[in-house]
Amino acid sequence: MDTSFEQLTRASLVTPEDREVPVPATLRYTSEDPLAVFIDFPPESTLDGASVTWTFARSLLDEGLSAPAGRGDVHIWPCGRTRTVLEFHSPYGIALLQFDTSALRCFLLRAYAAVPAGQEDVGAVVERGLSALFGGV
Image 1 (tube, rainbow, N blue to C red):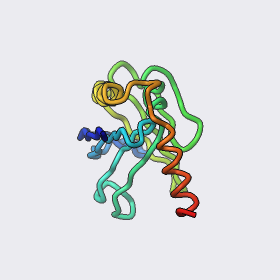
Image 2: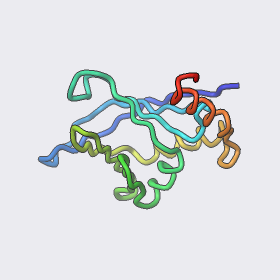
Image 3: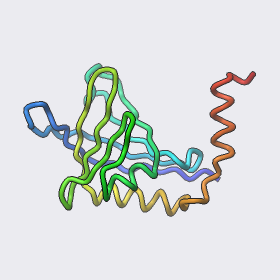
Image 4: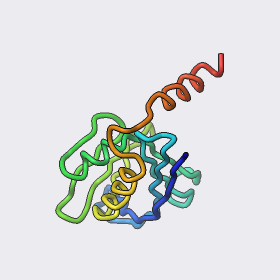
């Protein structure tokens, strides 16, 4: 049985001039992809006017709430006691967003309640990924 949920939240985009611009975001989780979390940004929040979804490891979000984490396109670290920074790297540049730590923790607790750590069905995820990669060959 698939368990999916969304949580609306707000982030602050930190500009090169150190201004903070409010940005709506939706945190998503689905047990069909139990190792991942998704953050959706609506078209009005993006440079090209198209919605954007970032996907990264649930464990990365968990780790980044208490210590700097990430090596690839997503880096996460705590910023004081109440905020967490998510840094997204793309071919267009870097976006630095601050989220309320309590909102991220609440979301993560719901994700672990849906599928506890260590109980993820990764076989189905791998099978879907290979099928997508090879186009059903």
